[in-house]
Image: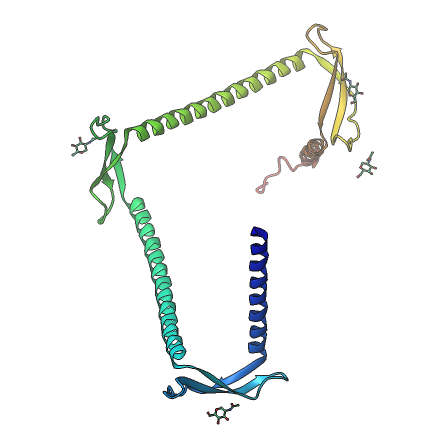
Amino acid sequence: MKNVFVIFVVVLVATAAAKKGWKLRQRQQCKYDKSAWSDCDTKTNTVSRVLTLKSGKEGCQQTQNQTITCDRFERLQAWKIKKAESRRELQEKKHQRKERQQEMKENKQLVKEQLERCRYEHSDWSECDQATKTVTRNFTLSEGEQGCEQSHTITIACDKLNRIQAWKAKKRDRKQNRIDEKLQMKQDRKEKRKLEKEQRLKCKYDKEDWSECDNTTNTVTRVMTLRDGEEEECEPIINVTISCSKFERIQQWKARKMERKNEKKENKWIPGLQNAHPND
Ligand SMILES: *[C@@H]1O[C@H](CO)[C@@H](O)[C@H](O)[C@H]1NC(C)=O
Ligand SMILES: *[C@@H]1O[C@H](CO)[C@@H](O)[C@H](O)[C@H]1NC(C)=O
Ligand SMILES: *[C@@H]1O[C@H](CO)[C@@H](O)[C@H](O)[C@H]1NC(C)=O
Ligand SMILES: *[C@@H]1O[C@H](CO)[C@@H](O)[C@H](O)[C@H]1NC(C)=O
């Protein structure tokens, strides 16, 4: 039974939609100029108007007399007025909303400007008031021009303050932890570098040439074998691996350094340049 009903409704909706579609197409295809409605004919209780074809395809009627009952006409007129009114109201509301938004925006800007202009010092939070379960904090103007509030008080629930303070403490702890970690890491790195330097001084290596850049790992390596140093303290063989790009940078830097050195040498070897003096 339920299914039958559902199908029935679907068919109804579909039929209505088809009819509406046909009407819409008809209206789009045949455009009419409409005369004014006649006065109500009290004998037939109808009003009528003449539609004259303005544009349209084949099959459109040249003229049409539209006749409706006076009651329907009245209802139609009333509905039209109501529609126009509600449209105007909607527009008015939209306009008001826009104005309100603009006002809010300006207010926000004003508050922002105030906050920038007016600087406050605040007291500590008061003890939790057991009666109201609230805490207060006073703000007094410390710096600012005209238009700044001299002082104001903020009141919040004690629970809220507790939560805020717990959150702040947690944040502070996390920050401190991060700082400690960083410091520790820095110290470790320093320690490592120091150890490496000591090793370098103690352990002398023969260095092989660098390998070609390995396309898959994007690294170059070279092997260093111990030439001179205590076996217990020095690694007998060290594989040094760095990225190809770092290798490139080092090579470039070395080349530049060499160039500068050569330039200096050349200048030194030009006779007289070092000691020449304009007044000589
Ligand atoms: C329309 O109405 C007018 C005036 O009542 C009449 O003269 C005319 O013949 C009507 N036309 C049609 C197509 O019914
Ligand atoms: C805030 O100011 C008022 C009035 O000056 C004072 O009674 C109150 O104790 C102050 N509160 C705090 C938390 O300093
Ligand atoms: C590595 O890259 C170079 C230059 O792009 C290319 O000529 C060479 O064939 C590559 N080698 C391998 C093993 O992919
Ligand atoms: C050094 O690296 C090369 C190439 O990756 C590898 O063949 C060799 O076994 C490594 N030697 C050491 C001592 O790690």
